[in-house]
Image (cartoon, rainbow, N blue to C red; front, side, top):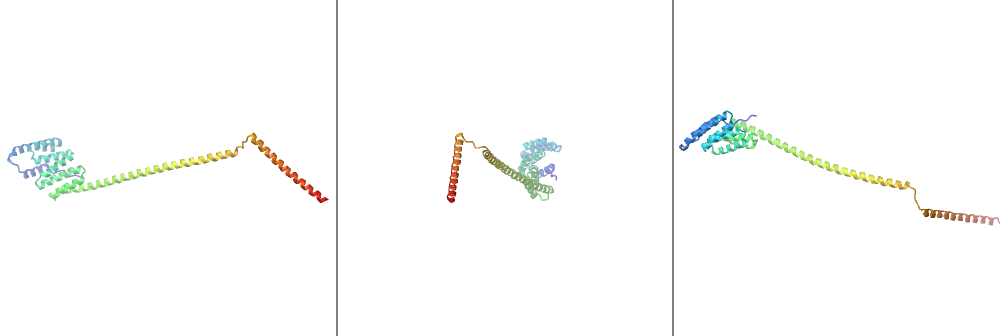
Length: 255
């Protein structure tokens, strides 16, 4: 989509000169500033926008009431892509313009400066102001539609960026949670492994204890031996007594 540029400077000059009432006290200055202004227009038409700005500002200095010099300065600023300065200049001119058609042109160009600065919402309002003063201006209607489209695209892009940022934040949060869970799982695995190892070590120790022979001192061994011998002696005595008792019973019966 193309952008319709500001309205033709020469046409504006005719409108301005027809609408402005100059007093006799500034006739000489007006003639001088118009001469400098024409030089600026020549530079402008040659694409020398920086030089044109210099000439237009000179015209402003000569005649502080020169509406056309201020207007042309704004146009030169626009061509140099100094859009914020250009809009500021047009904003000042909008307060000075008395002719409705002239004011419509000012708001049209102010809208262009805002549009180039990607301030689409503000540019839409500027174009609307221009159309209220000149409803039949097709260029302004075209730019208004274009600004609305760009505003929609901007809002959609902003929403998309916001969604992407939210998705990124959610992903980062999920990654942090996953990392934390992984750390907890790893820690639990280490604890489980440690417990299993301790349990295995304890089992190994128990098995080693069971496999090892019982170690006793010589004194304990002698005491145990004496006890066994005494136990055997006691058993032998009991057996001998039983044998003797049986023999006696049998003898008595035979008699």
